[in-house]
Structures are given as C-alpha cells and as structure tokens.
Image (cartoon, rainbow, N blue to C red; front, top):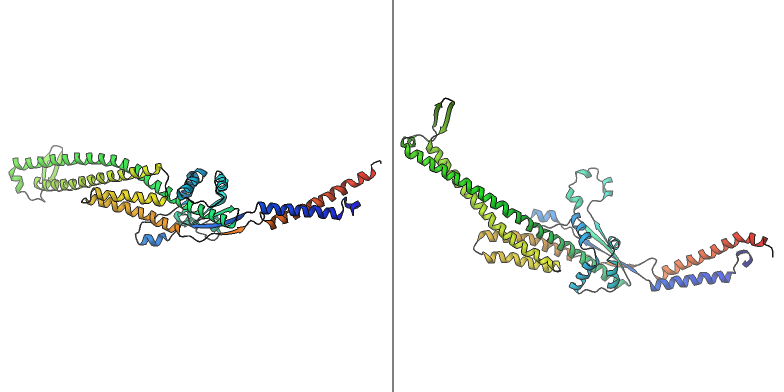
Amino acid sequence: MKRWAGLSPSLAFVIVVACVLLGATFGILRERYWASASLEVAGNERREKERETSVVSLSYTDVKRFWSSSANSPALRSYIELTKNNPGDTDRLLGAASSDANWRQWIRPVYPLARADTKEFADFKQIERDQATTLFGIELRVDGSSEAVSINKVKLLRDYVANALVDNSMRDWVLAGRTTYESKRAELDADLIKADRTLSEMQTHVGDLKGILARYPDSARLESRQVVSVSSAEGTERFLSPVAQLVAAESAMSNQRIAIQNIERLIFQAALYRDFFEKASALYERPALARDRLKTIKGLAEQISAAGSTDIRAREIQNVLLASLQGYGALIERLSVQASPWAARDQLRNPAGGALLGLLLGVTLTVLWILLYRAFQPSLSRSPT
C-alpha cells in the first residue's frame, strides 16, 4: 500500500488521530454555548383601550431608534455600571458590542405580520398598518464560555433592550411635549390678542346701539322680530330693530368673554406643560435606568398640583400627565415578566464537534496526499535514475 499510496497505513492512521486530537483540543479551549431568550413587548392593547386606560405600545420606529442610539458599547457599559450586573465574560461582550453586525446577530425584532404572511392573507393590503408595524417581540441570541455565562449574558441583553426601548420612548414623548408646548404658547398668545380685539369691537358696537336707542326712544317700542326697511337710491336696506341687534350683540359679547377665558385657561396650562417638559428633558442629561427616571418624572408631575392645589386647571394637567406616565409604568412591568432563557452547546465549538472536524480534516489530508501521489507517480517513474 505504501508503494501505491505513498504512505503506510500506520502513518495515515497517525495523521488522522493527530487531527482528531487537535480538533478536540480546539473544542475544549474554544467551547461556546448559545443562549436564547425572547422579549415579548406586545400586550393586550385592544382590551386596555376598551377600558380607556393609557396604553403605550412599541413599533418599528422604536426598534430603528434603538439601533441608532442604544446599540453600541458605551451605552451597554453605562447600563452595566448602573445595574452593577456583571454576567461574566463582560469584556468580550463589550468588545463585540462595538460592531453593528453583532447587534444584528444578537437581536432580531418580531412583528405580528411578516412578508411570508401575504401568501396566507389575500387581503393583506386591507389590514391596518398599525398591525404590520407594531412590535410583537424581540428574539435574543448570544454566546458564552459556559452555559451559566451565556444565560446571564442573554438576560443582561434582554433587560438592556427593554430598558432602552422604554427610556427612548419616554425621551421622545418628553422632547415632543417640550417642542409642542413651546410653539403652542406662542399660538395661544396670538389667539388671545385677536380675541381681545374682537371683544373690543363688540363693545364698541354695543355702545353704538345703546346710543341709537338713546337718540331714538321710539325705536325701543319696535317688536324684536320686526324688520325695518329703508329705501334708498341704491336699493332697499333691511335690518332688525336696534333692540334685537343689541340683544344679539350682548349675547355674542358674552360668548366672546367665555372664549377668552378658555384661551387664558389653555395659556395657563400650556405654561405648566412647558415647564414640566423642560424639567423632564433636563433629566436626560445624565444616564439613569428607565424605572428610576419614570419615578423622577412622576415626582415632577405631582409637584404641579402642589403648586396650585386649589386650581382645577393645575389638577387637570396633573391627571393627564400621570395617565400618560401610568402607561409607561405598565409597559415596564409588562417587560419585566418574561420567560426563562435556555442555552445549548455550539454544535462545532465543543470537544465532540472539534474531534469531528479533526477527523474530517485528517481524512481529507490523507485522501489529498494519495491523489497527489497517484497524479505525479507516472512522471516520477519515467524520470531517469
């Protein structure tokens, strides 16, 4: 066989065994476990909306925002420092977190409707867009040096993603409220000026009507529904009696005063909203957990009624804000209750998988040697000695 294959059976066996041992050693030194977990973010929003409770749902936009602002190593390191949670193998995790490709491998969003569902649902285009963009859940998968380390790492990532999704959603709500009420206050100030000018014109009109009645006492005896006609060269002019016009003008002036009071109420509330959102936005200048930040923002909302406890306008603002914050609190509680993760050995990066790869490598090298030897043997046999 040595003359035909170029190596003895014992040598071929030694090559294969050496490759198997090398592969098993690699599997032992580089053994990895993959842990998987799921983050269910979709609750029963429809039932909660029917009960008229405040509901905060996450969508495709929240996932895109997570990729851009939270899927990075510094943000993950800050979260680990805040929670003081070291799952093991942290340096390797933080190093891998600097790559966007690793985040795409670790985290995969799940939506209620996927592209493959178009084959099953013929009326896919008629489905509400909210159902197609609402985030149903997130699948997480990360590796570790042992089963316990991989499970702890996937738990850490799951908690981090949940915290980031809620915190980013609250931040957008705070910044949107700050921008909205800064511009709304200016608009309401302009509306108040316009309403005051209209009221002044109405008062002038009422004063003129009273002057007419004073100059023409007989006009007061006209029936309120009687229409007075005055002929002129340009045609016939018709109008209600001065008394009827005076009653209508004073009624309109009363309605205008009520409208001004409503605008003043909105201005007062817009100022409270603006101050609240300015203070809340200042909280995002330093890192904090979403649960702790929510507690602080709730404290700001409760201070509104303390500043004006006898003013129903302030209590109305406080109730609206607390209802919105209650939705974020419910979201945090919903995300904190999840199924337990599970882990499994990497099929290749373990002693058995490494030995199998070594066996394949040894057999491949042996066969390759035989093929090359047989290919070059005729030329070697014809060469002069």
